Length: 332
Image (cartoon, rainbow, N blue to C red; front, side, top):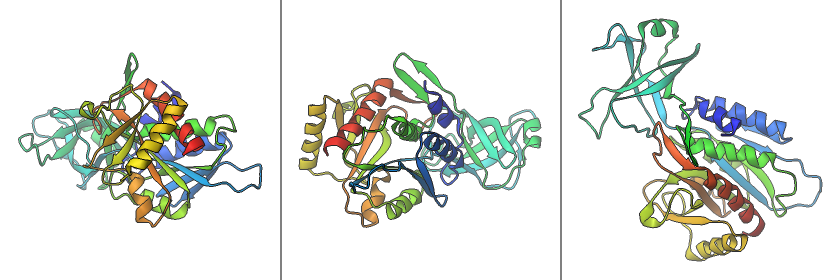
């Protein structure tokens, strides 16, 4: 597995607190010769200085830096019932994390460091309205400088099984990773467009990052990178290529655009899949909401276990993803 992807997965990055991922992106982009601009704490962009004065249309390729997590809503530790000497603190959802069973390995981020413990469901009988706490050893609790508002996320446990990559936060650390890969490509892959790379915060909660990105970057075409669910009933499978969303809470493409994308991918020999997913959405919503007229394409990686401690993707889809981006840049 690529070292940059491992670093991104290991980063503690919950909604509104994406500094660790942002710093990895800054380092990678600057090392590849791109100019980075911070848009407050909401987003950041990278541009490659053009060697020609020729004006080209602008393509924004963007991803989000956060993953669902939890936030501490109590001022201090309490003794955890049923465990010998351990401590706990109540936590509430940031976004929509989900895991099976009663507990999962986790990390607490305080002002004085990151500490290991467990997220525990405290009312397992209430499936529709779960409550959670973070549990840690007594010695561990004494080392923390705990404060209300501190963040908790899953432990960054990574594994591979054949062509399958398994880890938390693949939604959407994979999108951020792809932004680093595009920055490292040899010059000349983007012939038609001036490419701007963008990374937004708070996609999993509020959506503020993409709204700021949409307001600041005037693009002629937008490609939003994210993850989606495997859905065999729609023909969406791991290993069969990237997925274009035709309709959801943020995208509504007409059949003409669908057929155009099919033609582009067919001519380029790039596998592509399509989904109709009307229950949720991506950062794509921000651009028309800001009054931007550019076409917005949600280009996603199929996955299993989205928002869980063990999300799964197929490595060949990552290669097809990059090829699909290049095909859209050349021909959309």
